[in-house]
Image 1 (tube, one colour):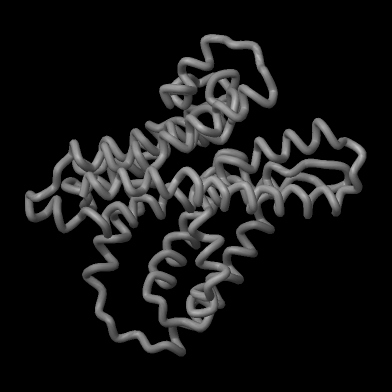
Image 2 (spheres, helix red, strand yellow; image 1 turned 90 degrees about the vertical axis):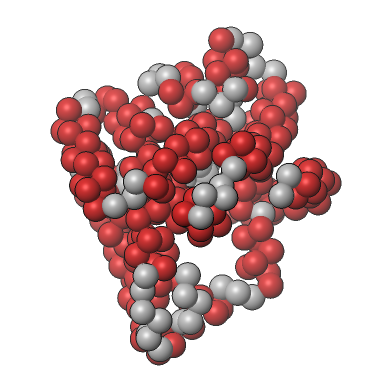
Length: 307
C-alpha cells in the first residue's frame, strides 16, 4: 500500500518504512537460524552460501527488470548497468537507486548483508552492537534531511545495522528458557500487534530520520522473537494454508507489484479507485503465483542441487 497512490487513495508511507525495516531484521534472524550452527562448527561454505542466495534473488530480479523494459520501454542509461548488477543502492542518487523496477534497491542492499553475514555472525556480541549503534547515531546526526532516503533508507552501509540486529536477536533467542506458556505468548502477540499499530499511527508525527528504522526496532524485534515461538493464538492463525501460500509468494509479490500498479495506472487511468485497488492486488497475486509455478520452482530445483 505504500506504493499504491491512485485517485482518492493515498499511499500508506508508514507501511513501506515498516516493511523494509522488518525484512532486514528478519533476514538477519533467518540467515542466522539457517546457517549459524554451520559457522560455529566451521562447516560453513561461503561460496555455496552466496551461490544459493544469488539463485534465490537474482533470476527474479532479471525477470522483473526484463518485464519493466518490455512494458515501459524506458530510455537506456547508465543506471541500467547498476540496476542489472544490483549495485544501484551504492549510488546516493534516486535516479540510480530507484531506477527501473525501483524496489530492486532492496535486493542490492540485501546482497551486501549476505556477503558480510558470516563475518557479522562471528562478531555478533554486545561490544560490536554498541559500536554499530554508535555508528548509526553518528550517521543519524550528520546526514542532511535531503539525503535521508539515500543514506538512512537505502544505503547498504546503514541497513547492515538492521540486519545485524536480527543476528543479535537470534543469539538471544537460542539462549532463551522455553518456559513461556501459550496464554502468555498469546497475550504478548496481541499486545505487540497493538504496539505496531501505535507505531504506524505515530509515523506522521515522527522525525523523518527516525521513520526509516528506529521507530520500528522496538516493536519489530519483539514481534520476531515472540512469533517465532509459534505458541500464541495469532501465530497459530497465521499458519492457515491460505496465509502460508500467500507468504510463499511474498518475494514475487514484492518484486512484481510496482510493475502491475504502474501498468494499470498507465493503461486504465479511469477505473474507480476501489476497483483499481482490487484489480491491482488480484493481478499481482495471480501473476506472482504463475511466476512461482512456472519460473521460481525451476530455479529452486537448481538451488537445491547446490545443497
